[in-house]
Image (cartoon, rainbow over all chains, first blue to last red):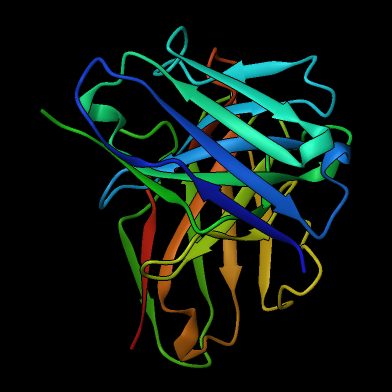
Length: 122
Length: 111
C-alpha cells in the first residue's frame, strides 16, 4: 500500500545537525512533489520545505531558510531533510508528505508518514 | 500567531451541520485557489479532506465540503458523526516568501 516512513529523529543540542530520511513505497515516487511538514507539541502543522519531482525546484519556510536543505533520490524512493544549526524552536514531529498533484505542486498533501520526533535541547 | 485565522473551537450535535472558517488575505486565501483542509485525531498524522478549495480526495466522505468567498475559506461538515471530533486545519499557498501557510486549528466537539 501507499506508505511513507520517516527516520532519523532524535535528541540534539542547539547548533548541532541532523538528517531525516523518508522511505516511500506503493506509488511512483518520482512522479510527485514531496514536502516536509513539522508540528511542534500542542501546535498546528508548519510547512517546512518542498522539492520538485526532478529536484529542480525547492522552497523553504522563512523559519528554516539557510539552515535546512531538502533532497531526494528517485532511484531509492527516498526523501531527505538536512537540518543544520538547529534551534530549540525546531523541536517538533517532522512528517514527510506527498503532494496531491502529480508532476506539479498543488500545495496540498494527501499521504503523510507517521512522523519522526526531533528534540533540540541542551 | 498563525498566518490564517480559524476559530479555536466549534461544536455540534450528531446529525447537525457545522462550518469552520479560515480567514487570510489577498496574498493567500483570497488570491489563489490552493486552499486545503485537514482533519487530525490525537497522536495521528493529519488527513487531507479538501484541496483546491472544493475538491475531495477519493475516499473522503461527501459530508465534507469546501468553499471560499473573498479572503475567507470554509469547511462544512454535514450530518455530524461522533468520529468527526478532531482538530481541523486549513492551509493555503501564499505569495509571501513562505510558500504554504496553515491556520491555527479548530477543535471540533461533537456533543
